[in-house]
Image (cartoon, rainbow, N blue to C red; front, side, top):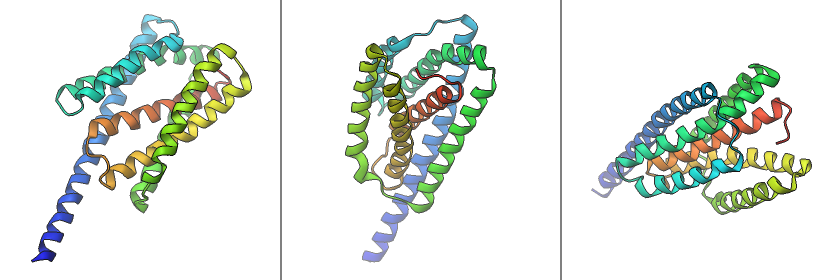
Length: 217
């Protein structure tokens, strides 16, 4: 009898993991498409580069997502957040198209997609447990954000490159970490999982674009 209960519990857990993964990837695909549409809209309107000012709405929308993630309003919050990020990156894409053409954009997109599929596929295939890296990742992100804000005023090229490389590494690690959290039961909210994956992809794309476009900003 105990074996029956254990088997039923395992099956239920597997089904829950599959459901969270399906919902996360479906919502991620939709938010990426919406974000791309907002980027095109921003480019068509000729919106100027927003700089660090884009962080104010971003931080507010992150809090909104966290507050509403367990309700239907959470879906609206996610689209608001990802739409804003798409809108704010439009001027950057316009700049690189004007300077280097469309090739760096396409290459950055391809590199971002390849990174996501390789890292997610590896984590899903190996079922690697990344929970032990949680503290390291969160601390690293805080340190990098502080360094990024400081370098906005200092304008040190070497520090800018270091921050970009560190952000690229941590964003890649976050993709593996979030996937691991889902498959090991640490994450059951697909809205939170979607936001983590989307922001990681946004960062990777932005950094690859700056490298490919020859910018140190």
